[in-house]
Amino acid sequence: MFEAVHFFPSTMNLMCFQKRSTPLFRRLERVQFTRLKSGPRCANGEGSLTQAISKSFHQRCVAALLVGVLSIPGIQSSYAADAKKPVIGLVMKSLANEFFKDMQEGAIKHVAQRGDLTLLPVGMHSETDIDTQVNAVETFITKKVDAIVIAPADSRALVAPLARAIKAGIVVVNIDVALDEKAKKQAGISLAFVGPDNRAGAKLAGDELARALGKGGKVVIIEGNPGADNAQQRKIGFDDAVKAGKLELIDSRTAHWETEEANSVFSNMLTAHPDIQGVMAANDSMALGVIKAIDASGKSGKIKVVGFDNIPAVQPLLKEKKLLATVDQFGSQMAANGIDYAMKAMKGEKLEGWIKTPIELVIAPAN
Image (cartoon, helix red, strand yellow):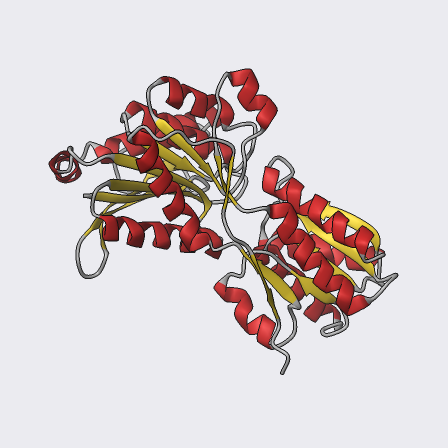
């Protein structure tokens, strides 16, 4: 049974895995395009590309590679063997982010326990790789999967391809990042959202920061991708906490969910505002970059940091008190919930409105 596809468009990699009992996956095929001195060349030695790869060509390659790999005989026969089982495509964001690694692992385990469907998970190389998400959706439409469960990288850009999927008779379940309501209305679709209250979660983290700093504390926020609803909601939630705690918000900039970008952005913030006392990083990946910048500046322990996601990488930082708090949104369960709702929808159950998933504040231990 074909189990997982990962896109890495920056290097034009496509890796495919097939399920087996122990270990869970074995690698079947890897196709990689690399740039050589003479221009891009297929790594398996079959020909070269003498001209620079354009953006549109790049997009076609990604889609074509996925279609091609799904057509490999070994995969095709296995795929056909499970033809009676519903096929669900899971589209996530960057698998470089531990949150989405946990999401994928949780989904795969859940599907193995259910045993009544075939899962095709797709992960991207970066948090802002919107084009590849669009290509993944289009490929799933071509392959006529039964359902798509998606955590969109952008709340507006993914609406049109998902509308095409719905019109093709594919069930679509939106998880993690809500699609834009106005864009959905314009596209003539209605979709439930299965995900957390990002505003409330950011308010929890912001309140904890306010308790630690007291009134008048000077704070900044490192925002996520501006086009994503969860980034917008976390900014609003932090603003709520700033107002309630009478903090002073002195700067707000985006780092697009990325660790290294957050490190650079916060370093610049610290130069511009050496009196910063607290930081809200809209996800834990960015919190890692912020804390790295704080350590490099010699201000470790002097600036309080809160994050969002509760990924494994921040657990030592919580123990060391370098991270004051984070918010757990239980990513390993989120895609599993989306898959369950997709199966229900395929049986005729109507999904409406906002189906809330849990959040929980996680704070540094007292001792």
